[in-house]
Length: 379
Ligand code: P1T
Image 1: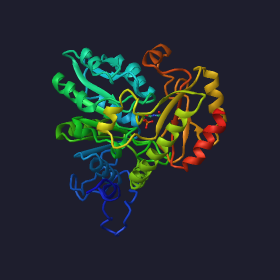
Image 2: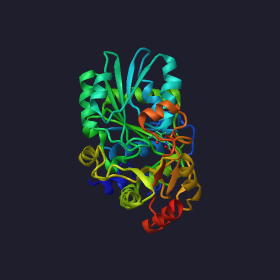
Image 3: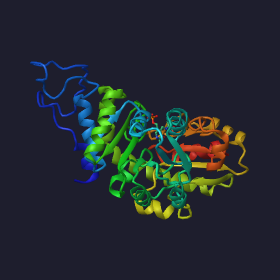
């Protein structure tokens, strides 16, 4: 089955009791049992809920994976994955990543004795150099948030296999429409469903997709034991969003290209970060592992002055200044003070994240209007 057909049909089925074509919202905490242990497969909604089951099956199908697990947020999904580790274990992570992931790693799990190495992963020799006999997890985010570096998933998988470590890909920026990491050797694919997958900026959720049965069993145990599960209404919203994922992503990519090219041609704009440019340092890897280049773009103005960037952000009319990304509407952000403020300034500088960087999530409006907005804001 091709991607668009799967986005609409995979994992979901009409309700057997009524024929309702859309998955019902099973707004219930518990399920009546005939006799202790004699139930219809559902006992308590933290453990299983039929709306969540259909979403999890749909997510697994889109990534060509065997098992999907849904969480109350992207951070809850990441938290569940890190719980696979023990004190003394080591993680190699990209040094350019969502600030909340960095905060969870360094402010929570480092205090439990897990060691994190942050390296520029688009250079695979840096990853190899960080491997020790204690390396248990390699954390890839690609393209990265916010600098749009692209990490070679197949090459990272080779390093992980040699090290005996698990490979995770945070696929939030790409979605399975653009790349399917399990097929490239990843053990786990992780999502902030809040973004492109749900697509309408109306819910916060996360997910993990895996092939391996044992890994699925361990993650399901933590999902239930720790309880970071989503409610059925949120699952319904993501299921509805998924049905248009392919159409939305197509338009995000088309508009992304137009906006990136406009910015690149603008005399006041300095560097533009977008993996679709043939001179992007990781363009070849992006072209190899992605079906298109996405709608996330970052840029700096010439002169690299923070106040100039703030002035542009304040002038936007359509690119609303807000955290998050991946909704139908365009958003703008200032990573240094917003999404990445939890990364110390010195670490941001080392990763190449300037205080004047502007991040755009290009929505699915008419590109001409978006370009008009950029024109009036940049001047
Ligand atoms: O916000 P939440 O659903 O918990 O997901 C966290 C997360 C994980 N991974 C990536 C790559 C992300 O971008 C995010 C959340 N990011 C933002 C809120 C943002 O504006 O970048």
